[in-house]
Length: 174
Image (tube, rainbow, N blue to C red; front, top):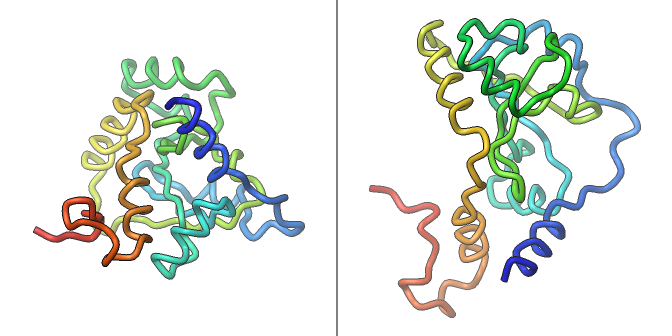
């Protein structure tokens, strides 16, 4: 069963060759970012195409900006990040969930050549941003929630064919 999961993940994560002209200036983005900012990504993979089709939005992936390792003041958080990221201490870092990898920390440079946008929450205090960043760092290493992908596939199947209990709970409201 694991081989089937790995095969599906590999198929969905295939990305075509990158764009010739980058649509975002990473240096400018890095200078603008504040901890707690969300980076929206226009993905190019097959799963991104499905997300784009369902949401009617070019933004198919999101990551949370946490800071550079040297700018993380909490020693415990810095230690946790250093366990997952071995690069330069001045590299801007993002926390994100990736299909097949789980919750990971990536340098902003991972998205070199990608189309990015910054989404900054209005009215987010510095303390709230720290709480969000600390929580996201505590989730590093947690496996990806495959249920969301299964819900996505069930959502795409014709409603009349599936028994009610198998239908997607993706867009249910409470």
